[in-house]
Image 1: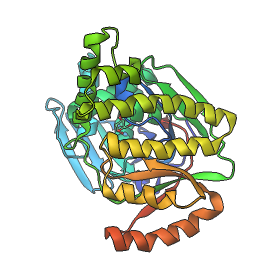
Image 2: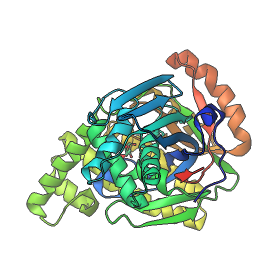
Image 3: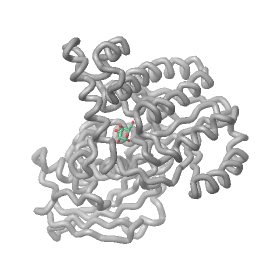
Length: 382
Ligand code: GLA
């Protein structure tokens, strides 16, 4: 199905009667951070920043990959698909490898890529490019994979070709997003439900620290291992516990010594699962203020217990907490940089940012950016 989104002018020169154009968005996540790989719940949505690809078949036995943003072309021999860590095209090769691994040897193609998802800002530009590649290759060669299969291929591409053992949230949000709706995804059963986000005079604003996170080389995989270590400790006493989703705070208190760092990691996760469940109920009741308070608490947990914040993210969260027109805020995504997500009274956005800009520059030495976010459709042909 084709959507009404326009082809970006930057990609127009690559479009012809044989090509397919696909748009795949970045994502936000309202609450439920670092829960996807713990079989918990998440509450993401696709946004109005996206990666676009133009693909067509070609005869020369190469994948000819072109990035408009980097003005760079990589011709990868079809027989030579392997990770190119640190390069933008590794994500595309990772997806090709997934199709190949399921017995569909992907024939040569040409792909041009352009995007306006800020890189390293925690908005999942990598999931967006993986999802765009998976969707477009599936369409170009008529492979007939469904959306969930494409999501899983994109996730494995990230594991194997970017070295990040991410959960399923980012790709799921990119591929399954719906305009105006957030997705409540159960990462254990993969059951999901959409619901409209009514923020009653408030809006979502992302404030970008301009500190680029590097998940692969950072602590992300370590956090995942720490959670697994916590599960192993709990399992000794409670063998039925398969993930932190099954654990309670009582079990954590009983099985993990409080002076062990694993204790804090697990405490955060178990409490965040609870916050997400009650936070969704807040939104359903229309109690945006109660939801916002939970976001602040999530930030504290991510910063002090889960250890994935940084001084710039804490600075932004502290700054807005002193402003009553911001009813909720926290760091978003993997962490160590990127954006905070804020729920701000519409008319207060500009004055708040104007006050913050010079202070952030003075105190952190960086020029911050901000994005007023709209929730848009997930991956589609355009
Ligand atoms: C990154 C990962 C996701 C998720 C978030 C934290 O975005 O790619 O799978 O774990 O961090 O919620």
